[in-house]
Length: 317
Image 1 (cartoon, rainbow, N blue to C red):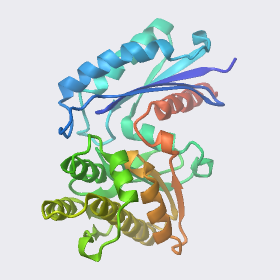
Image 2 (image 1 turned 120 degrees about the horizontal axis):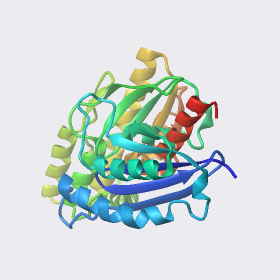
Image 3 (image 1 turned 180 degrees about the vertical axis):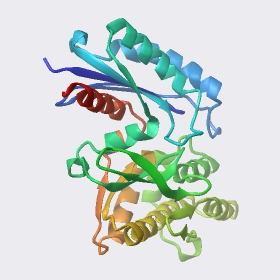
Image 4 (image 1 turned 180 degrees about the horizontal axis):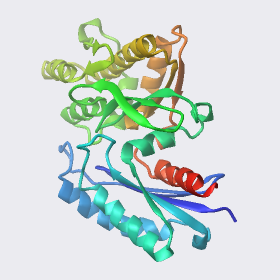
């Protein structure tokens, strides 16, 4: 039997557990937190309560029939990112369960960041990037960071948004259109039926490897207030994000000399965005890789894989 590795991630909007081995993803359990219609998020205290309730239902299925005695290590998201001031109470929910199970099984618990988990999950199916230097975009409701990842999987933020994130842009405008939060999937459905309208083009604000989306939100909200078609605005939003990311890629390649790019996070799961971005960069001699759609949104698979990686380094696994 293969050694097993467990992962726990309790982000702002998803409770996630996972079990992996060196060959496969054995279990990938997730429950979205409930956000009331019309709301644009949850208070941390409400999220912690929901995580506590969800984990009690997710943990019993963690091994999916595999022999739990083969568990060798546990990974858990301890905070959002590697920034010194990065902290959210929601991650305490996963840490409590992870350390409790680790003590019961007498196996090590390794802490990682939520962001590291996203990047590691995005490497599934993109083996060409493992042990190499590349730039990753982490695009979600909580971040739109440009990151440089080295051969040892050290991650440093080098650019990205200076105000709201691409995910916040999508969610805020989606809620304004009457969609449920998080709004990404529903907004993309609208965008599929949208028509390109030169009167509804949204600005792409990029300076070097920094970008801004707050002005885009204001402009799009103004169009909606004037009665613009929601589908057309949805399409324009994704077009704006694609143009912005394309500029960042071109500028990063020019300034840093790196031509390999990985896109991770919930926003990166959009098939429309992937298509637009690929077309815009088709002649730029860059290699684009995208996380598997199922592993783009919040999950604990990447955290479990990081636990496996760390255990291997510590034990010559």
